[in-house]
Amino acid sequence: IRWSEGDQVIAFMKTSLGLRYQIKDEYVGKTSGYFSQVSSGSSGDLGAGIEWDHNIVYYPYSNVIEAEKLGNNYTLNVVLPSEQAYAPESFGNGSMAMVAVSEDNNITFRNVLGGMKLQLKGTQTVTSITLQGNNSEKLSGAANVTAYTDETKPAITMASDASTSITLNCGSGVQLNESTATEFIIALPPVLFSEGFTVTVTDTEGQTYTVETDKANTVLRSSLLVMPAVVLREEVVEE
Image 1: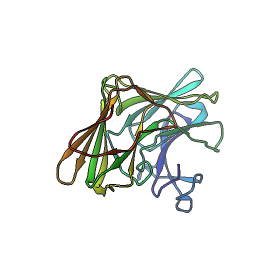
Image 2: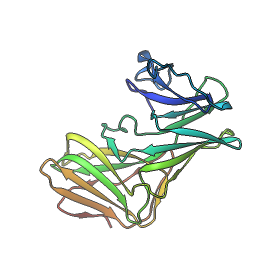
Image 3: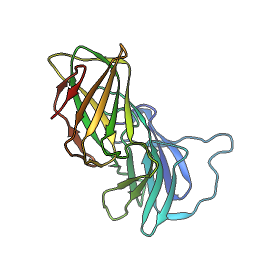
Image 4: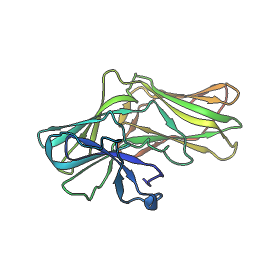
């Protein structure tokens, strides 16, 4: 993951009080860098917090994230956005959630999510793509992230009232090609689509196209589930 301009994190620096930090400009486009604290306003960042043994840092920043220490580990209440922005051959900015645990200021992030890569062909200009599991799997909304202090990989549990869909917003539109597939990547929590999933594609003409499978597919943390290329037609069914 390369840092983008304006990227921010929420950092619990050995305390339950979360502060906002932003990547310094000279590290934009790099995989490592330094962050500077962002002022919260005229009152500064003074506040009370419970003292901890570790720094807990989460990307992307949100002012509603809360962290709690449970035993030797830490949990964060987060919200995965129901809409992500399209980025060519990559995740949209802020889509790939990451968390770090450290006893000092050398922070190493680990991916919380995985993702799916869709490959589409056609003549359409795509404006949005909506993904839903066929067994009501939770894909966005409220979730609980566990950050372990023993180098165990982070885990995420979706809330019972989380959403069963997620949408990739392609802005003014992404033009497809008939001969070469265009990649669309959606960040997702690790999930088993036990009965497959359905993808609904909308183009600039307001037409919708359905791509679906009833086969079980699994999205793993820090991995991409790559789907075979399909040509958009009025109705496309993958057997």
